[in-house]
Length: 165
Image (cartoon, rainbow, N blue to C red; front, side, top):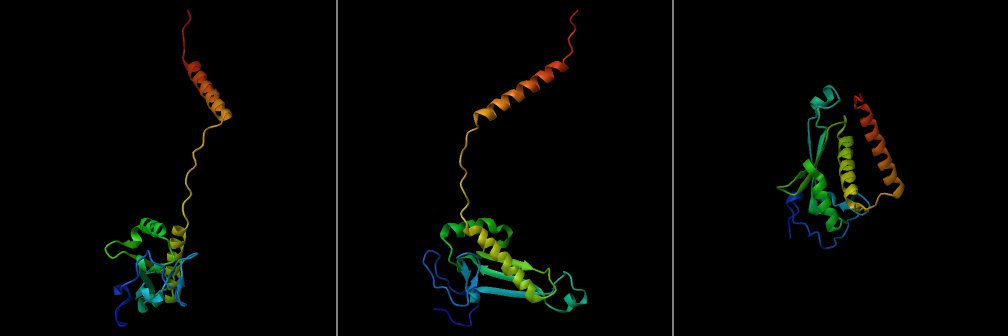
């Protein structure tokens, strides 16, 4: 097993295919998705956002990092969608999602903004996208298209100047 003083991101996490126990203090990320707070790595730095002199003196910019495999309660296909949709937020070398916020004056609100963004991403990936159902054009729409096509053709022909004599 791992030592308690080891950083959260270096710990061994159970594989995605086995169900894991949801801890009581888990952070909810969607309908069924959650992450153990010990698996979330926070870092803070000085922000360039609003706040005047305050932001030059305090570390209000929040950065959240969480390993994709540490997110529990998601089926494997949803985890694949998460990796696809994460885009620039996904650090592929570590298989981690990195979310940053520096839009607020306080560290607490920036932390909340990071969690909201992560929740929105995970929530969007939990829902399976609907498949497209093929439909055929109706008879009326075909007739309208052909009628419009004939009118357009006639209009172009009428513009053509012919000398009959």
